[in-house]
Length: 70
Image (cartoon, rainbow, N blue to C red; front, side, top):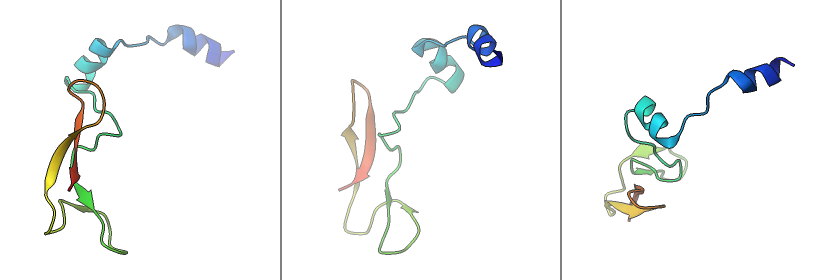
């Protein structure tokens, strides 16, 4: 019963309203905003290995992009 009352009270935000809450950008979780890499059993590190560059790539609709090592 409590769950039903909460569902009625919770306002669903539109995409534009959510942009206002998040500061204007909604990032796709599958579009990484930083380059990261891992060598063998080392922890995940920011940047790219010395023989690679961090490059942007399109990962969704218009304006959705991320970065990866290439």
